[in-house]
Structures are given as C-alpha cells and as structure tokens.
Length: 353
Ligand code: NAD
Ligand code: IPM
Ligand code: MN
Image (cartoon, rainbow, N blue to C red):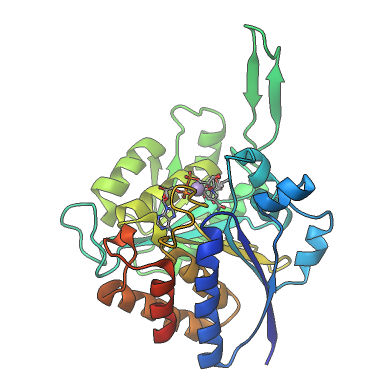
C-alpha cells in the first residue's frame, strides 16, 4: 500500500484547536481502512512564526511541500499582531496560486439534527456546491495608492480574469453539474454593474456550456443570488462564481445551514501537478480561541474530502456517516446549541469511524 504524505499546517487561533480533531479522525480512519498516513507537522505559515522570523514561511516552503500528497490546513490570521493581508498573502493565498489550486470546492448541506435558521427547511432541501475560482479574479496585488497622504489620494486595485482561468473553472463546474441528478448550474454574475469583466464571464459560461447540452444554466446577479440562498435555497445544485463572489457565497450558504463551523473546502489542483489543500471555510476565530469550544466538523469534513481526493472513498464515506450521526445524537458544540467541547465532539466522531 502506498504511504500518503500529508503536510499538517494548524496555523493560528482555532486552527490549532480543530486540527488535532481532524488528525484524530484521520488516524481512526487509517486504522479502520488500513491506510498508511504519514503526517508532517509544520509550525510555519502562522503569525507566531511571522513574529519570530519576519516572514510567514521559510524561503524553501515550496520545496518542502511539493512532495506531499496533500496539505491539511487549519486557518491563518491573527490581526491583533499581523495585518491580515500580510499573513494571508504570505501563506494561504500563496499556496492557492503557486500550487495552481484553481478550484475551491465548497459543499453546503443542511444536516439532520442541526437547527436551520431558515424557517421550515428540512434536510435535503439545502444541498449544493459552491465552485469558487481560486487563483485570479478580484484577488490580485495589482494596483496601488497614488498621491498618498493628500486629499487627492487614489487607490486602484485591478481584477484579472483570463480565458484560460475562467474556462477551466467553468468546465469543472459544468462537469460537476452534469454528474449530478439535477444537472443544474447557477452562474454568479454582475454583468449589469461590473460592465467589462462580468459580461465577458457570462460569455465564457455560454461558450463552455455548449459542450454540456444536458446542463441547464441559470445566470443570476450576485445580489439576488444571495437573497435566493436565503429565500429559495432549493433552487441551487452547483453554483460557480468568481473568487470574491465565491468567497462571500461560501460563508452565506453554510450560515443558512446553521453554522459556518460545519463548512469544509477543497482547494484543488485537479491535474495533480501540485498538492491540493483541504481546510475549513472558516478562519482563526480569535473571539473564541483558547476555550476549546470551536466546532471541529468543518476541519474533520475537510479531512474526509482530502481522503476522497486521494482515492479513499470508503474512508471518506465512513467519516461523513460518523459526522451525520454525531450531529443527530450529540455531543454538539455551542454553535450547534450544545455544550460540548471541541475535543468531546472530535472524540465522538472518531469513535464512530
Ligand atoms: P472567522 O471565520 O474566523 O470567524 C467568524 C465568526 O464565526 C466568529 O464569530 C467565530 O467565532 C465563528 N466561527 C468560526 N469558525 C467557527 C467554528 N469552527 N466553530 C464555532 N464558531 C466559529 O472569520 P473572521 O472573524 O472574519 O476572521 C478571523 C481571522 O481569520 C482573520 O485573520 C481572517 O483573515 C482569518 N481567516 C482565515 C481563513 C483561512 O485561513 N482560510 C478564513 C477566513 C478568515
Ligand atoms: C476563505 C478566506 C480567505 C479568502 C481569506 C482568509 C483570504 O476567507 O478561504 O474563504 O478570502 O479566500
Ligand atoms: Mn472566506
């Protein structure tokens, strides 16, 4: 059997609290399914490292990670000591771009046993994927501040979209939609206001969609799309969005399923030229760090997505079943209305794998 090399980056804040639970569950899955998982724990890509060394990562970070089969990531960010754009552009956003993880796959699902903040919704009625473009778009470092400190101060921040970059994420989303029962793709746009890039993006969706005649396409402006996430979540099957729109939708969607503490993500390089990265959607949550009350499910589900991507479908399914059962039977963390600690919930899930 092949040994799977996993880089483990807890990062900051609750990243350091949920990561042990992800590892606990992975170890349980490794035992049950006879997997060889070789964990490489990494203390850099954290604000503590930055404060000690003046940079987020060592110069040879790419060489250190390139041989890994996958990266398991907690969260980075400690704005009290390091500005967020410094810590994130110095770590996570570098991984996404330099490892060409151009798909950010973010499932949204209402689980049995989790109170839904939308009145009257039952499990099964919210079940879709956000496919977020992850390497270009609104996230750039192109631009600058001119006439700084004067009344004429000007700031420019460019958006960059390439045909190559748009087509590949759109193709992935069409393929995903095509593989699902409903074969329905929502394309997030804002072609009324963002009058250059967004009409172009819609055109690329039509062009790529020509190869997927069975998939129905629904282009929606991001404003009403957001409203419909709340009012008509049953409309959605696969949603494809630019980097920034996808970021926003992938917090809003999970919020409608009770808590962002459940939401996982897979930052994929589908060609497997570089390692892919698996992480919760949420961040380091400084407001609750240190109390051992963070919900570990987003981290654990992300670990399951990693195993699935590495060819271990059965192990993924077993972890998801264990999550489903614990969400029904408890123990549950506070964001789910319970009193359990991060550790207790992680242990309960691990015990059922
Ligand atoms: P956040 O996701 O860290 O927290 C938002 C809110 O959700 C907080 O009230 C927090 O307590 C709660 N929350 C988050 N995860 C939870 C969990 N597992 N269980 C229970 N409650 C949870 O977002 P933020 O406050 O905007 O950002 C805090 C820091 O994290 C910033 O530095 C930000 O840049 C960073 N961040 C990093 C990532 C990442 O590494 N992928 C993602 C988002 C934010
Ligand atoms: C996410 C996060 C990141 C993003 C931040 C921390 C840069 O919010 O993974 O959703 O915007 O991509
Ligand atoms: Mn986000």
